[in-house]
Image 1 (cartoon, rainbow, N blue to C red):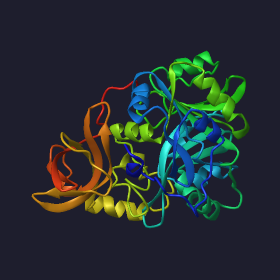
Image 2 (image 1 turned 60 degrees about the horizontal axis):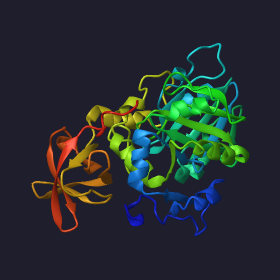
Image 3 (image 1 turned 45 degrees about the vertical axis):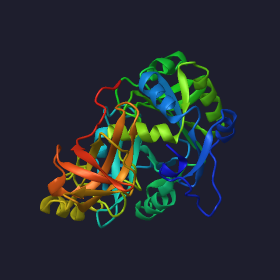
Length: 379
């Protein structure tokens, strides 16, 4: 994968790129740095294929400190977030007696049902929620929360104070245990821990399709946690390139490519994170229900190609006529062939449908495939 093919490459904001606290560490490890969502981030260290395999076979650590982090708290926090987010926040409260609960994938829609962002919400304390969003949507998300949350609910942008790391792979849980961390016993569960004497939050979540954790810690301590994880020979530092190939093998969406404010949850195949009938509804519900009830005109589908590698923006054809567009595509290191996501008319969205992708001057045969493309992982 070359830099030009990576989503977000070259997208600086105002020509000045931000850096995470691990920037110097990335340079010391020989990382190839690229612009992504306004940050200077590592694309790769030892090679995308090697880093990809490390996560599938052992463990890899990712710097995700560029992600936005917000904290919402107060007696009205639950009701306010229920109104702003599509999923049912009540599912995070596993036991009323526990201050810490679970993590949840959800969407935040605008009034027209468009996807402002996809988020992870953590029940991080009594009357308190930690929300992680995409770096490229930081200002949009912060403004939306500030505008829509009632005065009695406290909102804090903690993006400059909290740093995130992701340790992913079949050996990730074992490694966290050796560092003294108590790992949550279920996926999408949250817990407090101490890693190498640093207090952290551990969430059993990730963006790779492998078991592992996402770690929330103070910015001032993240370098120490990063070095502690890399002290294990089983752990490989991984960049954005491997993160992209890993998430695509699972069919995970990337906001800004596979969905955006012009996309509704039904067309994007994300109805499963929409609690249509929760009390009080949610912003954008009426518009999204209208699409659901009449049926979407297009749907996001997975594509597999035996020959050729699909890339973002390439045309999808049926019987020689252009019918859709690739939103994400790559060479799958695990399957050894091309895979991608694309929007096509709803009539062509059935698994097994034969389509074509225009790759340079040739047409490559493609088959609509229900993700995940890789079925067997450590999950």
